[in-house]
Image (cartoon, rainbow over all chains, first blue to last red; front, side):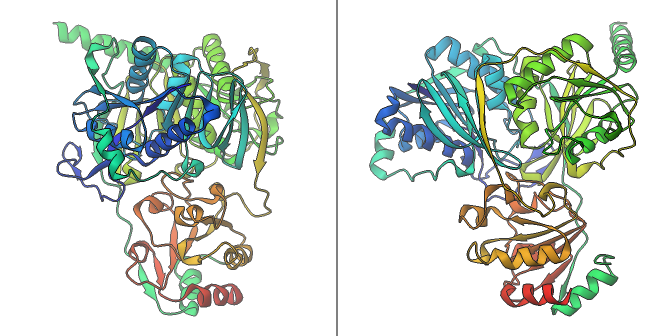
Length: 258
Length: 325
């Protein structure tokens, strides 16, 4: 089985973002591997460690500026065998390069560069654009089976049995045959920390480089971001001293609990 | 000269799009087949803000028009036994080939997030998801960066494929529709197969649409302690939610998670118990009308966000609150 894992470099989850004139300020802001992409990498590496899966190699793919190579080195330090970097300076946080173009670039990589991918693993969403579209759009373009919000992935004959999160709990779906696209949710696994020896080894692993505009994909945003602004601030609240005061405020000020 | 022609061209295409405006709503599969899901009703009221053209509702089963809002003029029944993304995307493609909608709308739930992007890919359109405001038939507002920023975005696609947040729109009134039910023939897909559902059964209101939510975080210390919140929720007739920390720690199942990557709720009353109030949690509940925080840490971020902050040990405060209500 050959696995392709999507990894995105995003603003670190702990950063409190500021909105500037041209969208969210990214200058000098700490960037990290998107948490859900990290879960996808972990899932790929665990499949590789599972002899029954017969994984030949795990390839990490990232689309973005040259610093994406750091993100790819992290993915390789976790266990990916090699990587592909598609270079673009277009902003990937919803402002310029959007999910449809990203999915189409993935499709080009699968159809033209890697050709024998059996499983694509991506995170369920990136925490900057919060779109969650790349996984299902890629599956749609390729006409491959999809399983989003995967909480558990089991091998099942020539395919997979995936337990996925739903609004009411979970559901189990069967993918009879690979290839398939799976997007990974929180409960799927807890990603490993890359050990120092593996970080050193990752420096020697191969990263193939391409330019985003060398693929026949329209990179323009079909959804034009006209403006980015901060949400309206909430009215300031108050401290209450005890439960009685709280109940009183809820009943008489907030008009609740009638 | 050229700019005049271009302007006329754009005006012409705008007037054509308004003339042929019509919307397809992808209904959320409802556990109770005799009524539409609250998220579907919110999607219908959102659709009414797009344009004044007809609205069609698509379901995988038959429904009595009397439980459908009057704004629905056609009901499409796909007669499918499952709601898998491959099934629905094929149905949307068939519906679009037949009826040429200008807008396709789904609720921004886990269901909608699973099916809508695949349907958009089938139509070769770039979708806009998690819409919280509709400014015109092509301009919308959606959150990014866990709601720390809002993006005003304009679709340039001929067909607008959209998902809308239920918390941002009122539920359309169920005043009965005179719509006809039309069968939509969809070929059965064989890529995936539904095996079984594991549904959390509860007599409490559904978290996404409850008017009152009592939510617990890491401060609850373990899953058993959540019974304190359940007792409070039952006294109030509310639902129980949780922060990601509580879910990660295994205190409660994942479908209780409120936050950026969980459920987005906007009840009349949100009581956050033992929740610190990380940005990611706030993004899932900051549109609640009244927020109460009960936390022994006065410096917890949530205490600044809450309308009423009670700095007290939750193991004393919550039972006292439950008793006194």
